[in-house]
Every structure is written in structure tokens, then in C-alpha cells.
Image 1 (tube, rainbow, N blue to C red):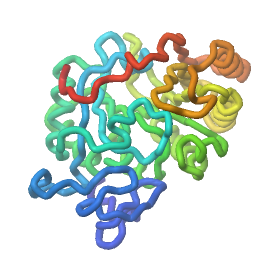
Image 2: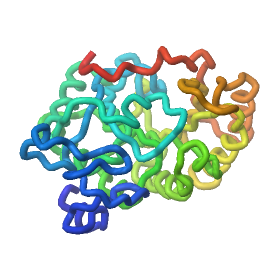
Image 3: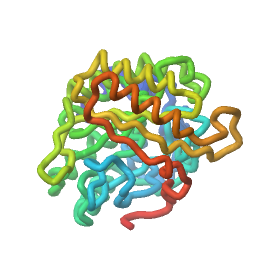
Image 4: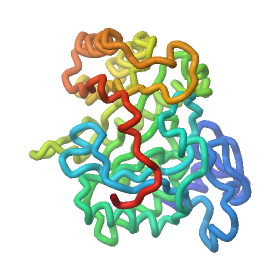
Length: 318
């Protein structure tokens, strides 16, 4: 997979101009950070390591707040990368999505982290915000598997992805976990990405092609497939309906859907984002999903809308 990146158009100018995601910012990450905030590491922190196979990792630990087939009783082995190609004004992980925080690791070190999380009993390896790090992941996963990694790889993404980049993940990713955020111009208003839905729709279809409907073992743990997430925002039930309509029209009826109620206003925001989701709003979203015939729906208690559930990005192997 690593060797195929240059030949599929994801890098230009002799491999120096990044085109990994729909932003296509063209930055040479050896010298500067891209729009996603990734790259531009100091020479002393990189050493001889390839900047495209190096990332800031803010946290690697077992995580218990994902969907039941992902977390289970033993937790998901979550690896949180710094940087993000979206600009969501309400991001609960703003501490790492919009700033450089963490420890510089290369692909070999990432493979070692995966193995350590497996040793701790994690159900899977959960790569959080992986889009800017496809090249690193394409090298790290085979290394980890050669060294004994046996648990599934989860690709936990905002869905703002290029199909060409996702194809480099085929055979490496076992479970896709996209958060399909918008179908309308709200993507520009809330996340500064006018082309979000066109990119995300194509990406989700590609994820479905690769991994199919979620497969769960006898212990209730996901082994392969996809869960499509949607964070229901205050005042945005119509957005949720649009996302659900897209899923109904483009994916199998058996698709597993996670309707999240955990939105927590963390900053000074304009209405309606300055408040939590109302019970009646969330109920209308869930009722609409049921009316479309979906049976595999994960829901949340509104008590999940709390800053207490946002991890501290300063730990490894807790």
C-alpha cells in the first residue's frame, strides 16, 4: 500500500505536495503543517523519519465510550491523532483537532502501540481521526500484523475522505466508523467545508464496498463491517432526517446506525449550538430512523452530553 500512494495521485511534485484528503492543500509536510494541522515538525523531533509516516499521538488507551460492539467490556484500543481536516466550531476534541499536541511517533512505533493495546485486552485498534495519516497507517498495520496483531482495525473518521485514500486501506481496515455529519449547507456553516457531503457520500459508499454490513461475534463484539454514526445537533433534526434518507437510499437496510445525543456545548457559540440537544429533538430523529425500517440502531441517553466523557489527551496505556 505505501508504494502505491505516489502512483494514485495523492501526492504531487515528487511526493512533496499532499493531496490525501478533499482539501488538496498541496503542502509539503516536511516543511509546513497542512490545513489539517499535520506536519511541519521540527527537524530534531523527526530525526531521519519520513514526515508522512510520522504523527503526533495525543492519547493511546482503552476507551469505553464507543458503541457496544466496539467497546464491549474490555474497551476499544483508541489511538487519538492530533490534527483534523474539518473545522467544526463545536468540536469536543478541539484540544487536539485544532492544535498540535502529543508525542511524535513513526509507523514502527505506531505498530508497537497497537501491540501494547492488544496486550492490555482491547477488543480492537481504534484509529481516531486517521485521514491525514493514511500513509503512516498503510505501513504500520502490516508491521503490527507481522509482529502478532490479531484484533480488528477500526477506522474512526469524520467521513471527509478521498475514495483514492480509502482504497489504500482496503485489506488493512476491518471496521469503518464514519460520522456522517451533514447533507446540507450546514457543513459550511458549522464545519467550514462546503463540499463535505459530496466527499462523505462517496467515502461511505466505498467503506460499504470494502467491509459490508457489520458482523458481530458470539460475544457481541464487531469483527468486520461498518457502523454509520450521526451526531444529532440542536435545532438540526431535518439534517438527521437527510442523513437517514441517504443511508436508506444508498446502503443496505441492515446497516448499523448510531444516532448520538452526546452533543455538549464547550465554547461560546451562537444559537442553537449554545445549548444541549432537547429530548424531543432526539426522539424525533430516532422515530424517523425507525419509520424508515432500520432495525440496527444504537441510541444514547441524553446524560451522555457531558464534558466528563471527553478524555484527557495526555496519556498512554491507561
